[in-house]
Every structure is written in C-alpha cells, then in structure tokens.
Image (cartoon, rainbow, N blue to C red; front, side, top):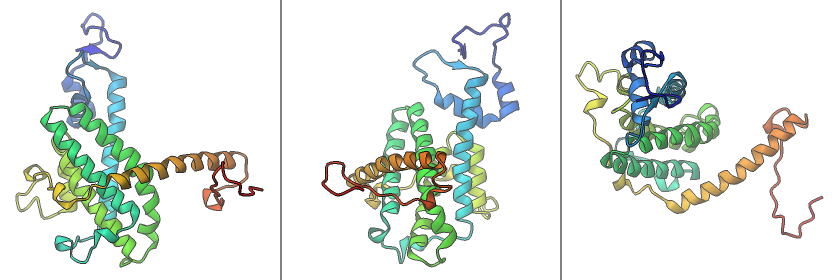
Length: 262
C-alpha cells in the first residue's frame, strides 16, 4: 500500500490513510468501489485525489440508477413480454438491448476471471458514455412528449426496465447499500416480504438473442458522425450563429461526390 504519490505510508510522513476514516467520511460504498478499481497484481495507491475520483464515479453510477427509477415510476412491465415485438423496436432500443447482452457476457467472464478492475471500468463507461451521454439524452424527448401508449415510449420504458434489472444486479456485489435502496425504491413491498437484491441471481440474457454485432457497428459509425456534427454545432454557438442546436439544420455530404455544395 502506497500513498497517491507512490511513497510508502508512515506516521512520520503523515501520509497514512485509515480505511475506517474513509468509511466514516465517505461511506463504505466508496471504500469497496476503490478496492474494486485497484490492480491487485501491482502496488496499490490511495489518497485524497484517488478517493475523490472514485466519488465522481460513484455519483455517475448512482445517478444512472436514479434516472431509471424516475422514468420507471409508474411503469409495469408486461408479463413475459406480452404485446412487445422486439424485432419491431426502434433502432436505438435494439442497440441498447444488444449492449446489455454484450455487457452480460463481459460481467460473467470478468467475474469468473476475478478481473474486477476491468469489470467496473467497463460498467462505468457503459453508464456514463453509452447511456447518460447518448441514449438517455436522445430518448428524454420521447419520455416527456410522446403519448403514454405510443410504441416508441413503450419500447423505451421496456429497455429502461431491462437496464435497471441488470445494472442493479451487476452493481450489487460492490455497491451493496446503494443497490438495496434502489431495489426497495423500485419494489416497495420487497423489504416487508424479506426479499433483497442480494438474493437475486443474474438474469438469463443469452437466451433472449439480443446480441447484434452488425447493429453495434452501425451505431458506432452513426456516433462517429454525430461527434463531428456536435463539434460543428458548438463552433456555431461560439460564433453566435445559433443559440441552440435545435435551430440548426445539418447537411451531410460526401466530400468525394460531385454534388454542388453551394
């Protein structure tokens, strides 16, 4: 155990970090999350900056569950998927289901290999990049504006339900209290009946045949183009050409084509 600068801990240097103090100040969840992030095959470093970074990660993971809980507040999933044809879901929803299947494969393999550092870094990336910064950002309009029984909104909520059910199970071994609170918030009667997220098993995702690698590649290409467009929109805002991206009209063209671009 070393401090965040790679120095050996000692009382004379005043760089000793007490696990109990970390738990008292930040909570045991933070201590477990930090342990999970460590590469136990090498020297392990810890310090205020290291723990602050883990706080930011924890906040993102917690906010992902909180966002899902808010959206699912009045949603009851259909039994056995009755009335839902996933093949007819919008492209974005089918992509998220494919990502859930991909993450499920990763979680199971990483757990078997004791590769917890990789496991939680990928889960964090999934929540912050794929969900919060992309999928949630796009689908908030559908959640707030579409009719309750619209096909797009129903598909979105079904995918949100699947996200919550899997994420809360994947996080449970480390974020023990947070996932328990989230589980009871989603299922208020669970506590009285003696149920717990820690009595649940991982869901059988493989049998759903959600994985679609071709679709994942297609969305990756779309996101690459989207990042270029958002950069252009930011420049237009900085130049006072537009005040909001909704005021812009984006035209995509092939630079090798002979189309008149004036």
